[in-house]
Length: 291
Image (cartoon, rainbow, N blue to C red; front, side, top):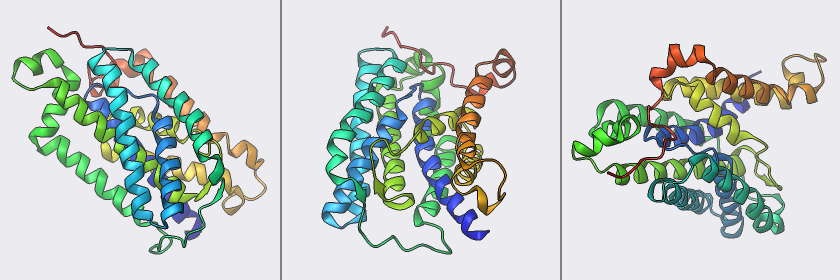
């Protein structure tokens, strides 16, 4: 049973790190529905670099760098050019799916490196994820930087009048956001499932996006939701470990996606908007007109 729990927590690590990245960007008012594309870039480049150099550290750094670069591109189109954030994000998703399939194809197969040492079956990335959750909460709750980011996502015009550079704040938030998404992809490809194949994330990015809304933009609730999603995902892979002979494993594999769809539908209802809408950044996804 502990083996199942450990694998579930390791799966939750991927969701936690990637979703934290999305949360940071959204708190600044920038929506990135292309989170899976950014994760694919991070997972693929991190895998290639680690495989060719034999270094997990270089693989993670490469994933963080490409994640920040792709996010900066999204920021340019969404902030500087004022483009539709959903369309820009979808473009990143499509680009990630196509380009990583081409670049990563020669590296199809296992990573071939000695596995990263764990602690009681838990990846060291799990403890990094916990630290990132606490750090994110502290920054947003206790620092002036967090206040500036939240202000940029709530009322950009008022924030600008108060002397805060909204464009710079949003760029910083989005780039950090992408770096965490890239790292989340690398955690998947280097630690959780170190075998490369085309589109091997299979919807993890979409689930991470749903987690941000599910968490009401609270890092601690997001972490709890990540554990839930990680457990559901692991259950879909190994249902016999918990409930032997109960439904087909292929039916269980649909459960995480059914939960994701249900969460997204719930977020779009008038009931949720009236009851929990205050948690949502007011300027999220809205283009900002320069005055």
